[in-house]
Amino acid sequence: MRIDAVTIFPEIFNVLDVSLLGKARESGLIDFTAHNLRDFTSDAHRTVDDSPYGGGAGMVMMAEPWALALESIRSSVATESTEDDDAAPAPVLIIPTPSGHVFNQKLARALAPEEHLVFACGRYEGIDERVYEWAAPRFRVLPVSLGDYVLNGGEVAVLAMIEAIGRLIPGVVGNPESLVEESHEDGLLEYPVYTKPSTWRELEVPEVLLSGNHGKIARFRRETQLRRTAKRRPELILDIDPASTNRKDRDLLWHAGFMIEDGRFVPKPESMAE
Ligand code: JAH
Image (cartoon, rainbow, N blue to C red; front, top):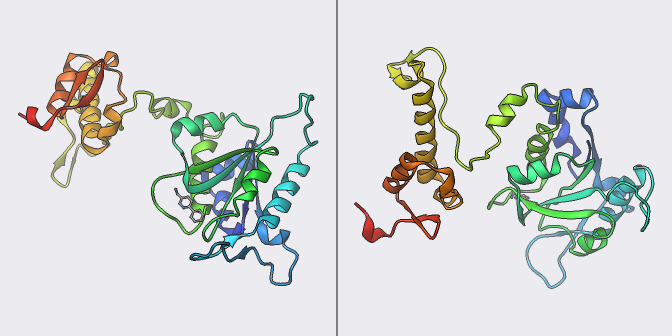
């Protein structure tokens, strides 16, 4: 996979030289380049921002450096595609912004088979909106949010996305089995894990995990997952298909505050509290 990032702080991406993703780059599985947006300015001060039309706080990133940077990335890949050729699809242009689509494991999986991802890292109040209009015929534009909080810029969000996507590329993560268990297919939070010693500072590993009874262990883990999810992420319980649960699951979820109505889980009304 080819990955480009456009940023005014290309050094932030030096961390990709280390660890897992660094290995994937050495082996050629991931070809990553960070581009300095200021290299696409033409004034002595290398200006990338200006005040917002209509007034308001802060500064806005100017359109022209973005167009030049993104054009240089597009023209560095083979040929520009025309209308009726069977050339490569347009690269995906991912823009981290708190107002984007939510980035989750499903979106990471959808992006992992792509040939070329381009990340546009904004700073200040954001990028001139016309850049998105300009980019739409040249890229598959995708504004994404990692969650409802504000960072100082898109760079740290891009590092997270590169790690989430990169580890799904075959050969990047050593053990594909650990990917299977982490696939989040059941929509529940993970069960807690323990390792040696079995007693640590007077704290015990749950006895069932030492029992060797694999049926009981699976049930213990399932119950911990359901209880944890109901407590920490109750909105995820609403997405569980009741057909994927057994009687014990449904009993546990009842006691955790959920019931089945019209074939789906819903919160139990306060009046039904036990
Ligand atoms: C902040 C440009 N959802 C995480 C996230 C992503 C991007 C930004 N903030 C939070 C951001 C300022 C300028 C992007």
